[in-house]
Each structure stands twice: as C-alpha cells, then as structure tokens.
Length: 151
Image (tube, rainbow, N blue to C red; front, top):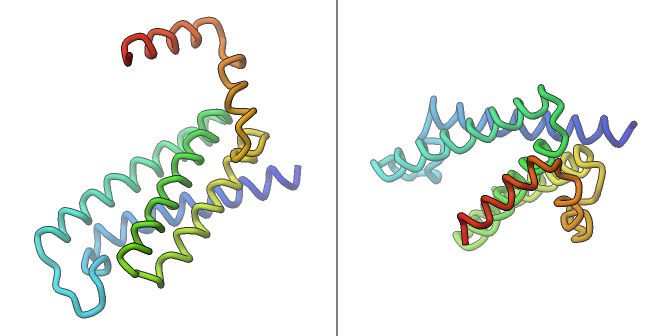
C-alpha cells in the first residue's frame, strides 16, 4: 500500500507541474525564451503548443485518476514520461543543461506513478505482451479492427 501512495503522490506532483508549466506559458510566455532572448512569433506559437499539450495531458491524467481507471492512467503516465524523456534529449541537443535534470526527474516520477497504477514494472516487456490477454472480448474486437484499419 505504501508503494501505491508513493506512486499517487508522484502522479499528483507531476500533474501539478504539467499544469503549472501550461499556465506559466499562458501567463508569461517570455519565460520560455532564454535569458536575454526576445519573444517573437515563433516563440509565441511554441508557447501555444506547450499550453495545449500540457493541459491536454493534465486533463486526461486527472480524469483517469478520478475514474480510477488504473490501466488507462498507467498507460498515459508512461506516455507522459516518454514525452519528458524526449524533451530532455532535445534539451541536451540544444545545450539547455539547467532543464535536463528537471525533465529526467519528472519523467522518472511519471514512470514510478505508472508502475504503481499498473501494478507492474513499466520497463519490463512481459507485462506489455500480457496486455492483450487482459482485454474483454469487446475490447479485443475493437483492437483487431484498429489493427486491420491501420494496416
């Protein structure tokens, strides 16, 4: 039970940070520009996309948690962690070293929350392979249709 509480607090902390990032970008997009950099139209567009992404993820994560949809919550927490790790890689490539640690720690917090929500380690392959066997017959049919349409 302690692990579940820890995962829940990581989830809440991460969702709060996503929402905070969205509102900071909304209220003061100049914070997204580097020190001494001028805000231009490209930076404002980037701020808009950041707001959309973060608020969408925040709403979906909060909704899944409110509905106690553990698998959906775990999957979205895993996706959100992946986004944070990709952000960290981009920050490394652009030499924004001050932000890299924050992105990696946030990604790890989301992964910890995902493991707690799913009741399994998200970095092991076997549980993801077993996901199909845990679907109801209706979900399996919908999943097969998606694969056929996507092929």
